[in-house]
Length: 62
Image 1: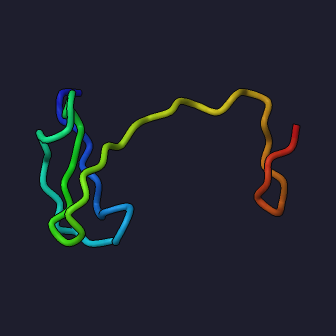
Image 2: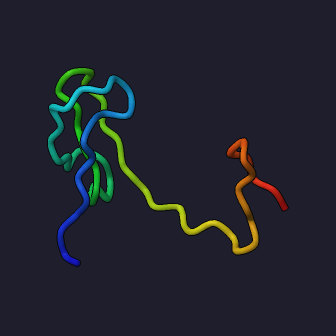
């Protein structure tokens, strides 16, 4: 997959007026919000460890 995933809204103010940013060092995947003038980057952290199960209340059990 060569296309970068685009966020739907700013994680700080919730506005949807986002543009790709080249201002950050290593700016691949960086975005600028026109409403709050913040630049941010989305990052995939990884998959949860196998063996964690959700309880009925939504928390993790070991």
